[in-house]
Length: 254
Image 1 (cartoon, helix red, strand yellow):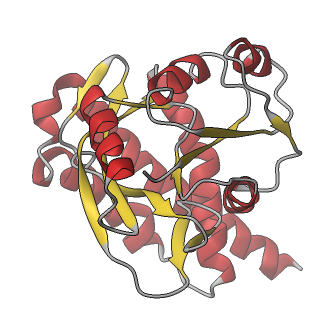
Image 2: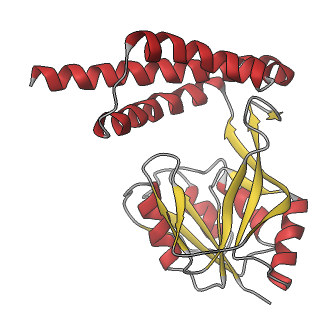
């Protein structure tokens, strides 16, 4: 039977970490929890579950996850965020993988909970993520929406069940996340030498993003929160343009 190491990175996740750990206990042989010096009760909750977090200053998503992976000893690594949890069906699917592995990489289908409602449209579901992979096969890269880069060829499969994602308990929490994300996306494009135009990026793309989320991806079937997601997605695109314009202006003034 293959052994499984679970990797979680945390920072002020007292509202989520307990639920996350409980869902992982049926499948985990080892926990590696990398905490970025939380100031709330995250670490106390982790310790109440009989685990010891590794303390390390924040160095970015990819670097933190790669460092945590380097501390694992299992045959496979399951990388999960503190605001995620395994569904019972996904727990069973992972136990089957441990009993008889048939691939090097496994994808899980993430189902997001937005303000207490499960979002099954709006381009948010299905959302397959590579989260279970063989030790030493890959590493994380990227500043935003970090991705796995593989050392060579691999086989992959999709697992049954859902990875529950308790992302946004309030609309305000979504907006707070949009602001830094839009800035990072704009800075990435700016450093890559891309060009933003007012009509295209400031007006058309935000409007198209709303239409895509709400109509093309059937966000209207998610009710009121489908509308909110579409509006906030458009808002993020507009903020991205504003940040890019600011960077370009600062460069010109220098």
